[in-house]
Length: 105
Image (cartoon, rainbow, N blue to C red):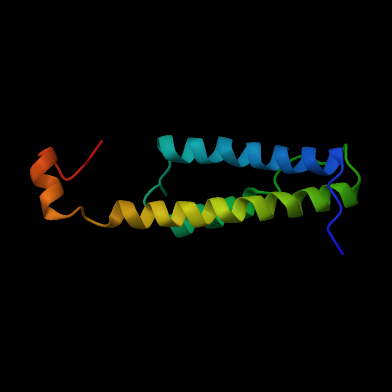
């Protein structure tokens, strides 16, 4: 049985939750103590995903919206882990010779 499309309220809950995470992640990247610890950032993301006011939504719409947000955030977390691993991997020796630096940015 195909999944039914989310309602407008469910979609709004998902988008509000994700927008809140973007705000939190931006603050963490700018001033956070955990920017070098992906595990802690991921735990914080999972803990804060549902930290929005859903009082204007039915409990069912809120729960389904959160489930949609969680599904959407999973791939983002995979990408964050991959980026963190790549950032911790030193560049090949010849990359340093070409750029004059181990950093490309």
